[in-house]
Structures are given as C-alpha cells and as structure tokens.
Amino acid sequence: MSQRIKKIIAAIFVLLLLAVVTGRIAGPAMLEKSVNKTLSYSPIAISPEAEALHNTLMIMDWHADTLLWDRDFLQEASRGQVDMPRLKKGGINIQMLTTVTKAPAGLNVNSNSADTRDNITALALIEGWPIATWTSLLERALYQADKLADITARSEGSVSFIKSKKDLAAHLGRDNDGLALLLGTEGSHPLEGDLGNIDRMYAAGFRMFGLTHFFDNALGGSLHGESKAGLTDFGRKVVKRLDDLDVIIDLAHASEAMAAEVTLLSSRPQVVSHTGFKGHCDTPRNFRDDLMKSIAAKGGLIAVGMWQTAVCDPTPTGIAAALKYGINLVGADHVALGSDWDGSVEAISADAVPQITQALLSAGVSKADIAKVMGANSVRFLETWLPDN
Ligand SMILES: [Zn+2]
Image (cartoon, rainbow, N blue to C red; front, side):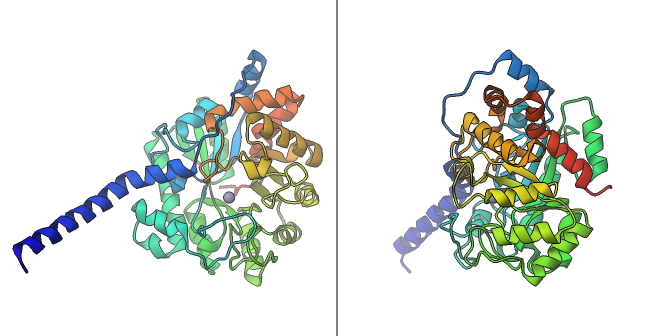
C-alpha cells in the first residue's frame, strides 16, 4: 500500500471517529430538542387568589418519560419539559416517572406493528446505554429504574423514591419542600413473556405497570396496535400477579377491549395515567366516555394529559377545559393530572402548572374540586393502593 493511500485511510478513520464522538455528545440533546418541544402560547396571568390557592395544593402528576433522556434530572435543563427545579417552580410534590422500552418507527395513534424498526434501540446506542439494553427490553426498564435510584441517591435527601404507603407517609409528613418520585412502565413488554420478571421489576421499584404501549404485545392489544384485542391468557396472569403485589395497573395505551376486561377481572381500581376524554377531544388516543365512567365507578383515576391528541388544546386553558369535562363526566374524585412530559410531545413545561390552577378558577371550578384534581385524589389513591411497606 502506498504512503498516500495509508494517509487517506488514516484521515477517513479519524473523521469517522470524530463523527461518532460528536454524535455521542451532541446527538442526544439535538434529538431531545426535536421531540420534546415546549408549547408556545400566551401565558395567562396568575391572580393573587390563584397563587394563594396554588400554594396550598398538594400536586401530583402521573406521567413523565424523562428517564429516557440523557440529562441530569436534578439540574434545570434548557430542553424537555420537566426536571426537579421546574417541578419545584410549578409546585408539584409528587411525580410518576415512566420507562419507555420500545417505540416502533412511524409511531401513530391508529395502528402500529410490533415488528417495525424500534427507535429505542437507536436511542440506546446514541445515548450510550449499557450493552445489555441493546437487545433486552427488561434491561432497558431496569436501566431507567437505576437512573431514578441514582437521582434519589445524589439528591441529598431532597428527592425520595416512593415504593410503599410507609414511604409516602414519610414524604407527606416532612415539613420541607421535598419532591417524591414513583416509577412505572409504559407497557409490560419488558416482562419478555416471563411472569417471574414482574418480581425483578418490583424489586427495582416499579409500582405502576402499563399493560401495552403503542403495539400489541404478549399481554394483548394496544389502543394503537393492529388487533385491538383484549387480554391474552398471559395478560390475565399478569393482572392477577400485579393485584397480588399491590401494584397499580395503568390502562393508558390499552385497547378499549383490554381496559374493559381489566376493570372486570382486577380486584383493585386502575389509573389511566395520561389520556383525554373522547367526548371532549375526539381522537383515537382517547377512551370512550362510558369506559371512563366504568373505570371511575370502580374507584379509578383518569389523569388528564397536556398534549394535543389528549386535550385538543394543550394550553393551560385547554387543559382546564378537559379537567372540567372530566369532573362533570366521572366526578371530581376521579380526575387527576397526567402530563406526558418528555414523552415526545409538545407541552407546557412543569413550571407553568400554576396557570392550570388559574385556568380552573377562571372556568368556575370550585376550590375544593381544584384541590382534588391537582393532587388530593392522587395522594388518596396512593395512600390506599400502594403496598404497605
Ligand atoms: Zn404514553
């Protein structure tokens, strides 16, 4: 080989290496910026009355996919919609973080195949996740659980990881402004078809299990899958095992057939962790109103989302309209917040949540009902349905 060709090969190698290194550094931020956009809208002014009310509220949100992204949750970021500082500015006391482990390319709310190329594999490579996560959905869930445990460990006591009634009572009993996090999964495909993996995920702190995400899996049909089927035999076994462990079942993304079946099969109430109401916002992302009523009738919670296909108007005024619709449909005791922050949606950021309190007041919702939907219902649900210890 001539010296000249050797030099050219060496130059190409250096350029490739540079591309990989800069891709690893700049790629995750660029990618997140392109999918988790902050909604642009005219902020609404907060009255002294709304501010005073907001400061008395216990606030919980049931859904954020922040663990998927490559940034430090304890630091305020200039991208995405949520992190600890922005939760504190928004007055949020409790946040459920949910893990995403598989997302078919071309994701849509109508129909997705489980066999389509998976975007999370590419994300795991770009963000430098451990090699075990490249091929295992369970490892992806456990890796994100580790990230939550790490956030808690580094927070010097200001963030707690809630796994039981006892943990929750300790959080509620504190007189400082600490933040509590819970862990859930978007879909139970990380079980990889093995009931025994429920125990591994439980040990890692998972206390809420969605059954499906955007595609049909071993448990049954997704709301956005191909079959729209109910539970499989395996799905029924998973529901029973989760009930036995006092784990919360999340019906978000389940097919309507599956959700209806779970309300009959399970001995416990369920949560729909991020959704809208079809009667208020008629999109394929939302459940029929009568299904929402039957979920609420069993003591369940409907947590209202903050993005377009959930509420049709994702401004604070639009979110308040969806919450008010829910109060009228299923009763003020069964409505909650379920933003879907950092879930590849365009949404208001967590620090804008006081504007929802203002919008609810302006819409004529009573202060007692505002307190319920902003978080009191969620706290009561956790106090009742988390494992004791
Ligand atoms: Zn989701």
